Image (cartoon, rainbow over all chains, first blue to last red; front, side, top):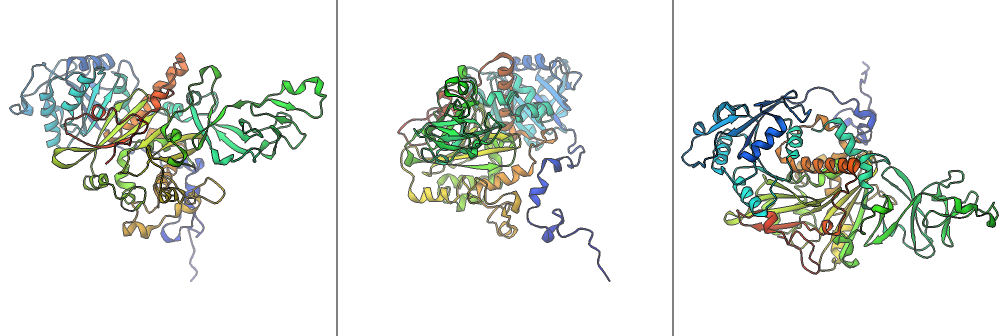
Length: 200
Length: 428
């Protein structure tokens, strides 16, 4: 019986051992790029963005307005297609002792001013981003990061707009124990680029 | 992810494009000095930033870089006769000097002065170190000549190579600041490569596979610190400087030479991956230099007579699945340079960043794009010169160091991250 080969041996995309040398040359052309399968290759993700001081909160308000969940319509100064970014700030700036403060005891607000519980807002989050412009409320940062750690949620720290080296050192040192990634940025505009890049 | 319009903005470098204009504010590597080894040697084609150019070295040792094509009938001056102070088109004898000025049109009376009306677009070409550098922007904006340490140390302390990479410059450059891929793609090289092995720092790399990253903006670009656990609660830091738009330097390992890259657009779908190795205070040993020539470390071997890597897309990068199974290489591809180029070229000529899913550890890449976009727009809209042009911004070194846990690396290594002539690099 004659075997009909559906894939000729010379076809550069035939599988495994039959593949001929040089398939990469064909596969990487600009022409081939148009055959990449077009489909949504990721699910919407949830990002919790915590501002740890008044200055950071003001900067986010400047960027996004008084919203809790950022979406394209809500973003004031950008057309960035945010998905499910949750913007949160501390209810007050009184220093807290992380050793004695449970997640449920941390008083947070969304940017509408509504009270929000940490353990509620962090539920289902893919990433937590801690934003600090001053060396304040690092006790709160520890409580948030600890809760994120316990829930296996990635935590990133963003030290923002600190021109004074000593202040920067303090903020970095304070954030370092809690953040798997730490970024020191000069300007607030980095926030939007970062959130967009991360599909926040 | 990156929106398509931003991706286009950062990846297109032909004349008249915003990113092309940004690149034209810098001195960039154009050729290896060895490509024009002597006076009156054969001219060399050099395509840069989407411009077809011809480079030559005239009878007096002056370097020229100009439009490849004769102004008369469009003949390529690659066929030109390099003789008596200029490059002569073999078709009708028109001759050009190193500035692109036509100095002879044999068919016209000398007295007519016709040749003075003909000039090819030309750019300065200067030799610093092993490299011929060019500046393709407006004369009034020309910065100081390049002052990278690898190019300024004595010849016996430095080695530079280049290879043709068949992808856009940006996806190649992003590999240079993507520290997190090293633990995977290049994991085999730390144990075996003669230019990496034996350093104490390698033990930290191998013991802690989950580095923590810190990204800090600098005046000229970025410092990207990768932190791993060391002894007694200390951290082993590997700090990579990125200087705009496309210079990176890999953190050192032991007393091995320091190394890094430039990524220079040829056109939007090809770039030159420049790779340098140097030691700040001593000559390279004969073994080190030979290892570089043989393609170890960040270098590669070639298709003879070309700058195309011997392992390239036409031969599937000589992928060896058995070596991969044996654990000799992580991807099956041999050599740091080709491990990178194989994957970066596989993305396609210009990767579609709108389909990416970046994660927090990609913040170095996110920040670099952010800085580039800001600089491109500031130049385009306000004429503000971008960072990375000054000698101060170029006087950087990478660092490998063990620091106390509470020391911010930028503060603790402030002096180590600067060039200190005559002083050894900070390394582990």
